[in-house]
Image (cartoon, rainbow, N blue to C red):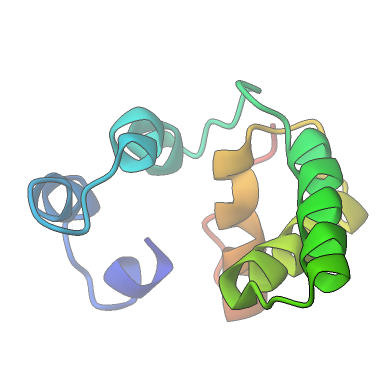
Length: 109
């Protein structure tokens, strides 16, 4: 979203196009409206994802395997939690990407 918006792309149309290709996913189908409207009422809260990602990264370390994207997501969840977004839906991770990018698209929830 932040990347598309930086180039002035119509995000609603872009998400439709992305959703129809290999980048499509159930998460995109179910969360694109949240991201477009910046409305992050909880479905599955960031705080719960943070807990789950801690379990995953710990189990991976114990098993001696790497989960590079899982580790990144765990860090983003931790950052969202630390920034007060723990009660938001996990699509609220967009707010963290906006913070990291220095954009001002955030709306208070």
